[in-house]
Length: 202
Image (spheres, rainbow, N blue to C red):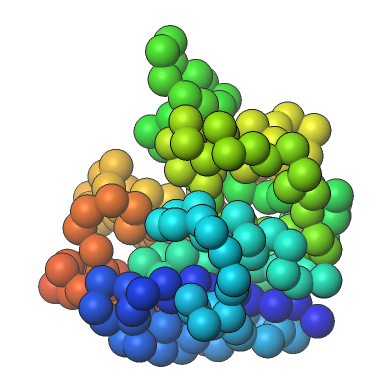
């Protein structure tokens, strides 16, 4: 069975329960694949990592198919297609190309990464090449995932299935993607007036 995982670390934004409850509700409405929803908190992981690096520990916590979702995503439509795509090659971690630091169109002098707001994988991933220096010098978990697994171990999710609010998606009357990512600012509770947030973040 698919495990749908979210990470509520240190009571996310002081509103962890609200964000978890709404994510669970969105998943239940928009995922028909049989699944179990799991909230992971600091009580569930013994780790020496901090901040976003804690997400790396999730890659070796679950034995089967996993869909990881950041708490601040908004799910607007059925997401079965993402799960089915990841099941076509279970050797890979599936993620979207990052909007700021693209690996498809890298910019000189900038770290090229995937975006880790939505991740799919199967089984325990090998993190044996992870070093303290990588944790010290790399900008975020998604940079480390890219270093460890790109290109052979990463599959890219289609751009039209996962969009960014920050970079202007969904602001011009266009229908939102099935998953809209609220990376950076603003966060969901700060833009509850947005029609698609009002409709779907509940």
